[in-house]
Length: 240
Image (cartoon, rainbow, N blue to C red; front, side, top):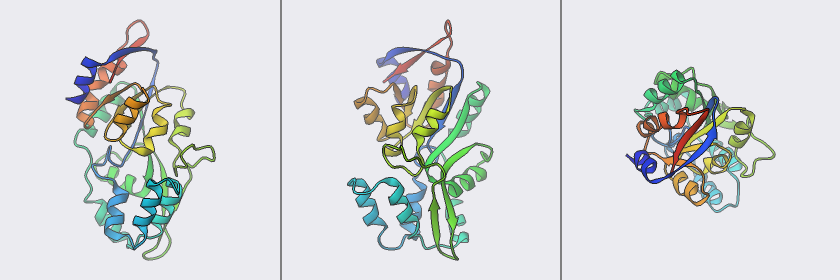
């Protein structure tokens, strides 16, 4: 287990602890796949790949990329729902949520993806009560869609549709980030600790961000007791 290896080989950092807020990414973290990518691959009209290339090259930010790509989706609501109902979540997510809530931790899904997709997938899998912060998907015709950005910030360093850093700054509790990709890079530096997957692992290593590398929520669950263990009002957290 990757998390266990990190605990054995890492170092310990002392931090004062009271309550924790968990900011959890959705696509590629809770959901097995990137939901927006699967929608574009299935329903995207020509041009969405060029926008993706421009974003990866740094010519446009993720806000503009996502807005342009969603405008190119050609699907009915029935087709959208059927596609979303075939998406899977990490099988260990439920046990992790239950354990976090049992310990008084507050979990918020914070995503640069689509709020409608997140809500439908979570409701179908039994997690409809979780708070969600994401971009707002709006139908604009029988087969037309647009994206709105209620959680954008003019101060966002990376120009995301949803500024995860703003959400981290808004909490007065200790912050645990769980994520996997580029939309989590900035907020990882603002979090007290990170459970990192995928591309977020080398980013945390390169930036010396306290973290544990995980493959999924089974690993995250195994790391949770160390994160919240109390000792003279402090928590000792293993870092990779």
